[in-house]
Length: 388
Ligand SMILES: Nc1ncnc2c1ncn2[C@@H]1O[C@H](COP(=O)(O)OP(=O)(O)OP(=O)(O)O)[C@@H](O)[C@H]1O
Image 1 (cartoon, rainbow, N blue to C red):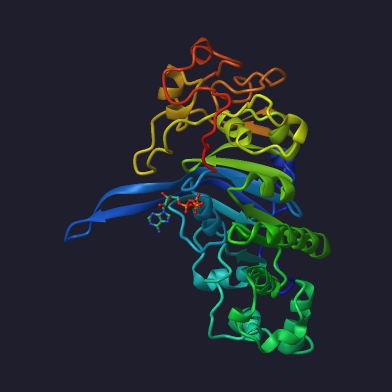
Image 2: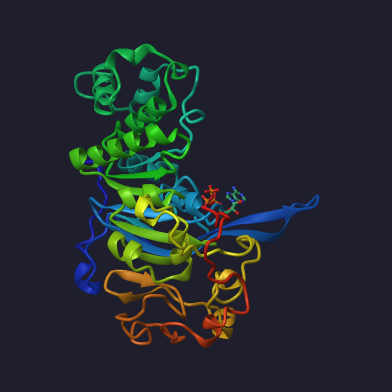
C-alpha cells in the first residue's frame, strides 16, 4: 500500500501455513457470467470463465499466466484488479480482504494495483495529449505530485524511454511500442506495488516486443514492482516470469517455478503447450518433432466437461479423469499440478499424502499408452499448429 493508505497488515500468515507472506492471495476465485434470454431476461446458464483459482503472488516476483484463448486469463486479471466483481472466492491484498470492496473502498487500493492493457491503440484516448493521459491518475486520486504534475509526467516519460518534451503530443503521433510505453508510464504514475499486465506485447511487432519486455524487466528492478503478466506466448512468459500458472478452461492446471515448468512439466496440457514452442536450434532442424497435437477445440466454458476439464483432449485420460476432478496439489516442491496421471512424475511425492483424495496413478497408464480413448494422442512430425 502507499504510505498514506491505512490497510490493516496481518502479521504474516507464513507461520501458520509455511508460505511466505503474499502481496496478493487468491482463494477459490470464481467468476460466472450469467447468460440471460427472453423478454424477462431470465438466466438460462452461465459462462464459467474462472472457476476456483487459488494462488499467491509474492512481493517482487513476476507470476506469468498462460493458456489458450478463452481460458479465463483476462477475467482473472480483471478480478484481481477488481475491475470485475467476483462471483465467489476471496482476494486479499497485503492481508486485507478486497473481494467485495466498493468504488470508495477500492479508491486507496487503485494506487497500489494498476493494470496495463493489451491494445495500446484503443487504451489511450486519441483526443487527449500524452500529458493529460499520463497525469490522469493524479487527477482521479486528487494528488499533487512533488514538483508539480508536468514535471512528474516528464519524469515518468523519461523513465519509460520516451522524450519528456513530447508532453503535448497526441497518441496518433506515436508508434505501437511507444504507445505501450505511454500506457506503462500511466500505470506507474501512482507508484503501484502490483502491476497486472494483460498481453502487454501481443499487439506489437515482434521486433518491438523484446524492447517492451526488457523495459518491464528494468522497471521491476528499479522500482521493486510485483507483476502478474498474462500472455499466450510461452516465449514471452518464459522470459519474464519467476513462476508460471497454466490455465485451462477457468482452472489452474499447473503452477510452478519457471525452471521446473519448462524443464519438467507435469500436466499433459503444459507439456502439449510447450511442445508447440519452436526451438531456435539449427542443429535440430529436420530432427523428429516431439510436438504434441491437441485434437479438437477447447470445450465451451458454458458446459465444461465433468471430472478433469482437460480429459476430452488428453491422450492419458482414464475413467477416473472423466468422473473425478483432480485437485491442484504440490507433487514436487514448488510444483502444483491438477492431474490424475502426471507427466515426469519419477521423483514426485505420493499424491495421496499431498492431499489428493482421488489418488492419481503416476506415470503412464495402460490406457494412455494405448493412445487413450478420448481426445488427441501424442503425434510427431505434425505440421499443424496446436493453438497458442
Ligand atoms: N463480460 C463477459 N460476459 C460474458 N462472457 C464473458 C465476458 N468476458 C469474458 N467472457 C467469456 O469468458 C471466457 C474467458 O474469457 P477471457 O477473456 O477471460 O479469456 P482469455 O483467456 O483472456 O482469452 P483471450 O486470450 O482470448 O482474451 C470466454 O469464454 C469469454 O467469452
